[in-house]
Length: 93
Image (cartoon, rainbow, N blue to C red):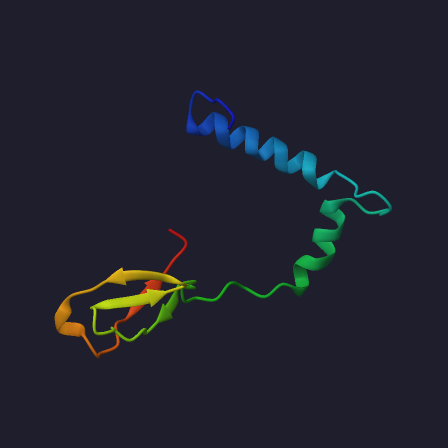
């Protein structure tokens, strides 16, 4: 992690790193990374307007011990859910 005095200092460093990376050549290629990106830029589509939610939603059944199994790990849930399906949202965090 770079040590910087301010956010502006960090942004300046990042801009320098980006410029250096655009001038870099991959071994065996004649164009720089910046040249290749300039050629690809017109072919890129805009980002979608709606947000992308990468979570995984599962609906495991609550067993008679008031437990659910998610990815081979068992979790306890309220007893009044026995026999029903619980909604589980898995995220990276």
